[in-house]
Amino acid sequence: MRTLTANLHFYTAQMEQAPVVVFAAGELVGSGKIAEITEESVKIGDERFLRAVCTFKYAG
Image 1 (cartoon, rainbow, N blue to C red):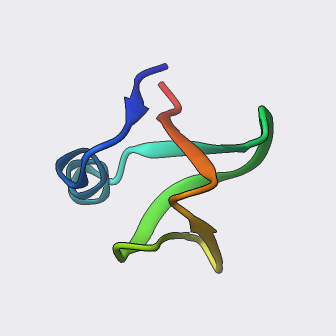
Image 2 (cartoon, rainbow, N blue to C red):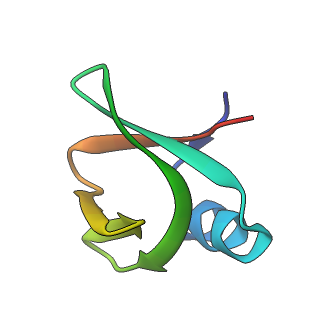
């Protein structure tokens, strides 16, 4: 799975509606399509995940 690190990665995944998985401390904590992006967080479904503490990867 490829890691999303730059803003470009997040916006591309959002535009392509690519499924993303979210990890915190090595544990899977969420998955789905990106609904919203800010400098501090990423919203997937109804949940927000902090970019500083989570790792985001393409699910496919």
